[in-house]
Image (tube, rainbow, N blue to C red; front, top):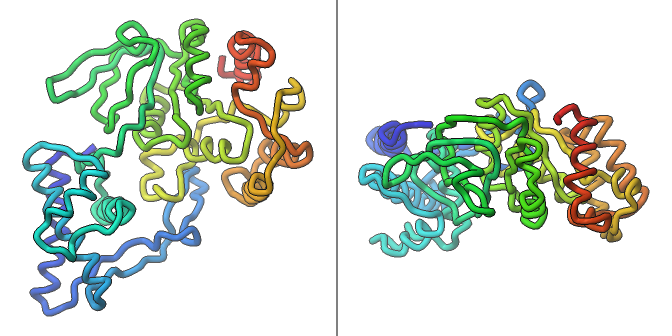
Amino acid sequence: MKTDADARDELIDLAADFYDQFAAGKIPEMELPTRTKSNIEYDEESGVWTYGDRTSIRSANSVNGARKLLKAAFTIEFLADQLDEDRSSTLRELYYLSESWDNDEAQFSSQDESNDLVEDLEIVTGVTREDFHMRPEESGAKVMGPLRLREQTNRGDRDIHCQLDVGQGGYQIPNNPDTIEFLENDAEFVLCVETGGMRDRLVENGFDEAYDALIVHLGGQPARATRRLTKRFRDELDLPVVVFTDGDPWSYRIYGSVAYGSIKSAHLSKYLATPEARFVGIQPADIVEYDLPSDPLSDSDVNALESELEDPRFQTDYWEEQIELQLDIGKKSEQQSLASRGLDFVTETYLPERLEEMGVA
């Protein structure tokens, strides 16, 4: 985590580089990794996705390129001022704020454009958007479990126990989890859960208390803050991490983003990904063993599964066996299909047995 002064200095250095190029009589430009799927590489050593060696030049030698650098300059000024004033804003607010800028050419045409520019600035400066005080829209992800932490807030620090001091909803993960200090930890492992319904079932059944588990609600494709906090649990508290999702190819990719990172945030994989994370289910084998209620695989599901067979993240004996089994049975199931065996089945039978098999609990 960088200080506000460090983050601001990186932005000012980037702006100064544009100025120096102008002063030297050069057309200003900015070099970036080529942000395409073909330039994403799986780093075997670290076990995460990273950008390859190919780069692209964003130059003012065309109208479109000049417009992009103009927008970058305006955004740099805004972010530097924001850090000076110790304020924050959301990605959505940045998009709307550009409409007040005094140069129409600097205004964003869509939020995707402003989001992409913030990512460009992250890559070039090596500073995360969280350290720029940029927040995404609320993700709603929460944690429940035997952990006491200290959180920095605008009203000062506050100590929170993620079971005793929170309601059934749990502790809401802040935008920048690096502002959290871990004080006391009695957890044995971290259980990342895809759906809110399953997370609520586990909490209602007291799974976090019975098994000293830190239950992290992923909320579908997990936000960066959720992935960052999960990585900190693994690295700093030395806790095993397991991921519990639906049994379909899109949910396997949710696991993949937790464990290995995503293509979109490849520049932050070493900061966000937890390669030690393991998949607990729903497995295709579970659909067969427990005769779970299921839906037939769609054509897009089949295509996604076949793609995953070629994906380095899933090229292990375990995943090849499970994916081939799923293609063979032609079925997919949701986490909550376990309720067909009773509301307590997931906490009394399924998870305890799977975690014991994995040597986690």
